[in-house]
Image (cartoon, rainbow, N blue to C red; front, side, top):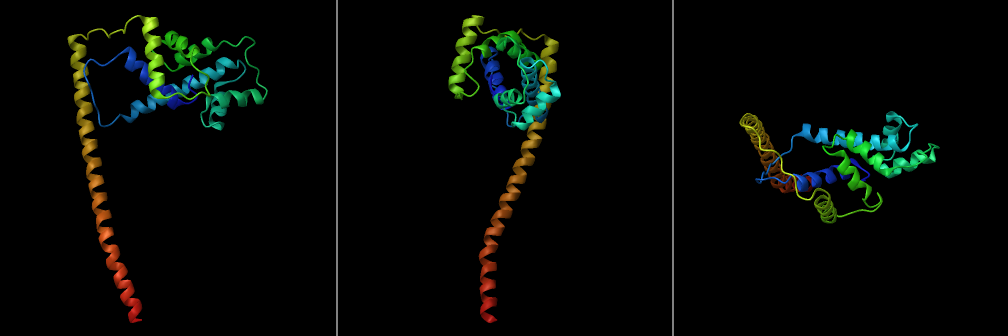
Length: 211
C-alpha cells in the first residue's frame, strides 16, 4: 500500500482508469476543489483505518497523531507506533488491514483492492506510474476477466448528468476567464516594471552626479 494520501490517490486514479475506461474523451481545465478535498479525506481515513487494524489498542486519534508526526508517511507512522511500545496484532493480517483501509476510504470494491494491495511491493519500494499502471492492468485482467462497463444510464439519469456537466462547464469557463485575466494583468505589471527600472536607475545616477 502506498504510504501517503498522494500515493493512494494515484493508485485509485489508475484503478478507475483501467476498470472503468471513459467511452468518450473528456478534458477539463480545472478540477473542483470539493472533489479534491473529498478524495484526500477518504485517502486519509484509509491510512488511519490501516494503522488501527494493525494495532488493536490504538485509537483513531492516536493513529492520526502518528501520521501527523511522520508527515503522513504510513510506514514511518507504523514504525513510530512500534517504537512507542504499541503491540501489533498477534497474527498480522495484511489483507485485513488493507480491507479496512479500502472500506474506510469508501472504495467501490474494497475486497478487490485489498487483494491487489496484498501483492503490492513493500511500502519503501518506489514505483514509476507506468510500472504501476502495468501491474494494475495485469491484475485487473486476471481477476476480473474483462473490464466491466457501467450500466447504460436511463433517460432521466442521462438528463441529470447532462445538467451537472453543463453547470460544471459554465463554472469552469468563468474560473478560467478570471485566471487568464489575472495572469494578463500580472504580465502587464511585470512588463511596466521592467520598462521603469532602467529609467529609475538613470535618474538615480544623474541625481548622484549632480550632488
